Image 1 (cartoon, rainbow, N blue to C red):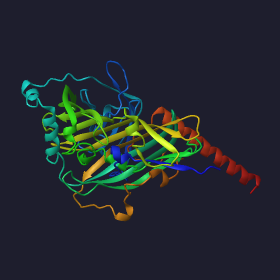
Image 2 (image 1 turned 60 degrees about the vertical axis):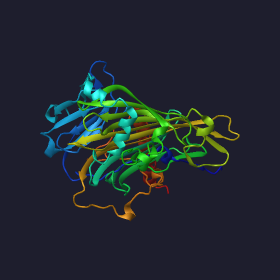
Image 3 (image 1 turned 180 degrees about the vertical axis):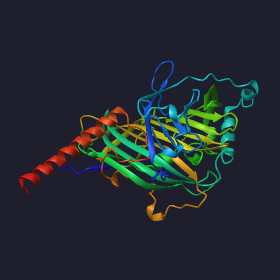
Image 4 (image 1 turned 60 degrees about the horizontal axis):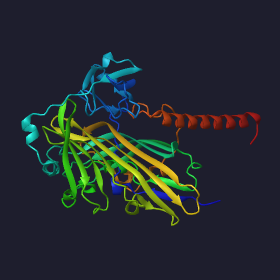
Length: 432
């Protein structure tokens, strides 16, 4: 039998890392709300919409189909939930007005107006971007924060899920000004991998949750904008937008040439009042196949060549008073695997996302012990197992799976049930 080869995606080149956190309400009774967020005019589902319980740090985010589940400790049921996403007016609703299931929340696009003074203050987009990173410590918290985050990692061959990994992690998030790296601890996790669908190439994301946490460009700017590389990009203003009823500058950026080892293009969304980065969406330039060949690969067999077809990244931040903190990030890597003597190429998609669902300022100097820390080189699919209990997550907030993932999970559960029934029948029949 042919030995499995291991292909590890080196996501640190494109800063793919993930946050994980500590549940702050593990013992509390809670109420669960679920539903869908849609565009009020077109009825289109809205992805990556943030739902945050007012005057708390409890939040969740909608999936690719606009669906959400929000678990709220009962002591906060008199609170309101704030529903926000880029380009839409914020909606604030009392939790008492929500049903337990089948909620349909409508958001409407915001009309953005920036005063002449605001627009003319930064005619040079590059100057604005430089100032964001020069003053990044001023707009962020200057103490460490202990976070709870939900992480999901999926691998697809063509359009079919072949590996699902989910985890709740504890994250000790260090301030931007600190030279200390963030620490991550695995709290709870489950996975399932169909190795038959992976054939003779096992695709793995090196870094696990770290693959998304390094997308925090305000903490780790060295992965994209440094004093040396920032001049290698063109910057220009796009039409302004709105988030959480606040005006934001929109800055386009693209590489001037292919002189860098990795070239990116995308958009930065900057709060007009605080000049804090609100969101960043960008992509790796994979147009030069010769240059990008094996760019995402850490380790591979000699008879395999990997061509990235697409590499997309996103990071969001939330405001708490006048300060901003990391909230959500995701990456999507699509690549083609050419194996010598194989007739057909194999196309895989690896997606990883992490959402902070709760956090608190680390006022008591909480630490994560070295023995409990995940390594930045961890391959999380090798560290965990199990995918059978539908109530596995309990009171943890998580990102609802999309329909394709739900279908894969249900198949996994059916296989587990069949296996248990077989084992039970063997016992009843007295067979060994």
